Image (cartoon, rainbow, N blue to C red; front, side, top):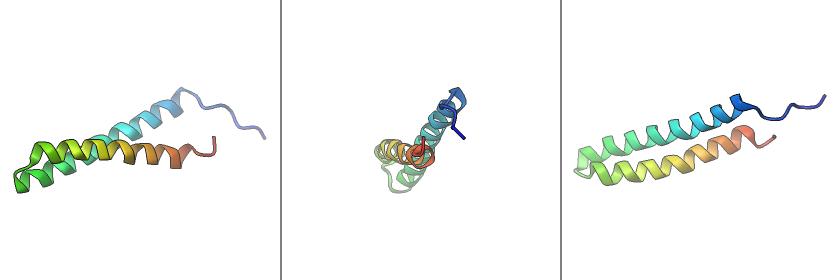
Length: 65
């Protein structure tokens, strides 16, 4: 059997994975930062860390395509 090429639903899922990981990591960073008085810097660090996590999730899910 041949696999069909990725469609719009796959692209939307990949984007949602990246965005969700970014928001989740930013929220965790902001929450931990608010405990130590560095909410904004740790929130931004979490945001950028979430970008890497999200891209790793997308790669792990769609590497066979």
